[in-house]
Image 1 (cartoon, one colour):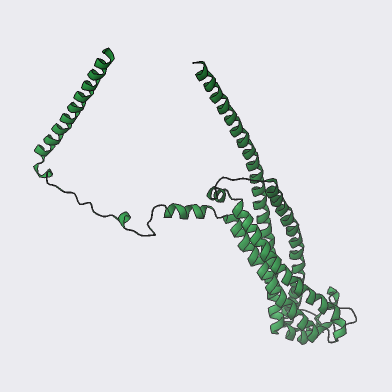
Image 2 (cartoon, rainbow, N blue to C red):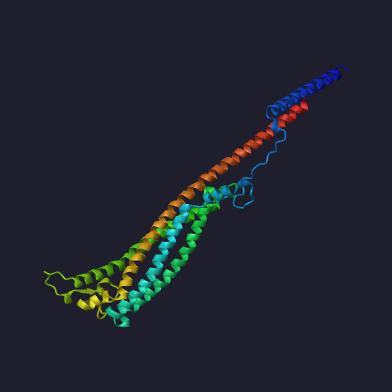
Length: 328
């Protein structure tokens, strides 16, 4: 009987406290209506805001989603890819047209016999086919490196959920570092090789400028100023005529083939230099990505060990609780 009486007393106490709270709230409401009489029949009509309008552009989370997507773009890899594509396009396009113009100049002026420059024509034709292969390969390789940059950017890993790395992924990343290094060294050679025709055309152009404005105190006549392309080794020494002098050389410099080939070789050399810069940029990006993958794999192993230890600790605690419950 005593516990029942205590329970009834507690229920009465709680009911009295609730009545006090309700009466206090009613008193506050009545006091508010007494101070502001017009508030009893006042109805609120909320003004619709811009956020209440159904619009796909102003939907919640749209701005955050755009920021998250923009954060997943590897801007360094994107800049390197654009620079690589631009450099390769300039080198391949301008180099192809400049080689064709060079063959036309040699055939028309420096080597009238076809058999004398037959080997050079075959080499130039082969180089043009190589240019096609270079353009195709670097278009594909640039896309692959850009994709690799996307999937090794920390923001992209957050977008796709929990990041997991494997030994195969780290091996592929290291392979790209090695391959980009080899290609960078090769393009340094291409850059140096592309400067050779620029040097040759510059010598011919500077000789033509001397012919156009000969020195007043010079003892050499205009017709004695010559250019011999045989000394560059592009045609054999028995090629005829091989050497052009005076006004004939000036006429060559005034042709459209010479003007276009000279400037296109300059642009092709600049494109090769831009490609070298892009590959160096790619090499730095890939090296940092490889280091990131290496650190991420170590962190992943640490987290796996930590999770395993926490699970074991929880199992031990649960077993100890069960044992204590069995004793009690």
